[in-house]
Image (tube, rainbow, N blue to C red; front, side):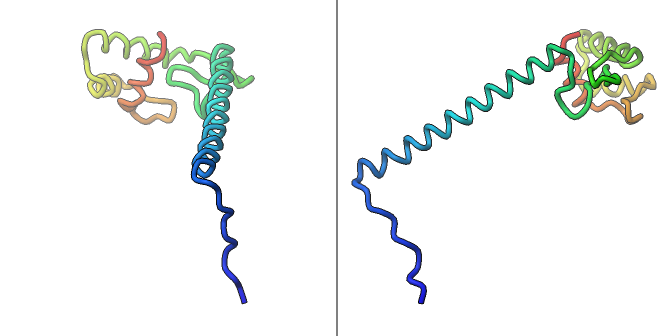
Length: 124
C-alpha cells in the first residue's frame, strides 16, 4: 500500500525562510547574467551588420552571406516615411500614403503602421 508523499524535512522558521530566499536570489542572478550576455551578443551582431531577428528590417534585405544590406527601392520609402513623420503625419496616415503611392513591403502587401513605427525607431 502506498504511504503517500514523503514528508518534507522540518526546518526551523528562520532557515525555512532563508533557504528559499537565497535560492531564488541565485536563480534571479543567473537569469540576469544570461540576459546581459544575450543583449551584448545581439548588440555585437547589429554592429557587424548581421541579421538579429527572423527577417531583415524594412528598407534592407539579406545578402548572400546573411548580412543586412540596404535595398534601394525600400530605402526611398524609408526616406519618405521620415519626411512624412517630420511633417507631423500619424503612423496610419503615413502607411496609407505609402500605399496610395503604390509602395508595398517585400511580400507585396501594404506596409502596416507597425512597420512604419519600427522604421522610425531605427536610425536613418
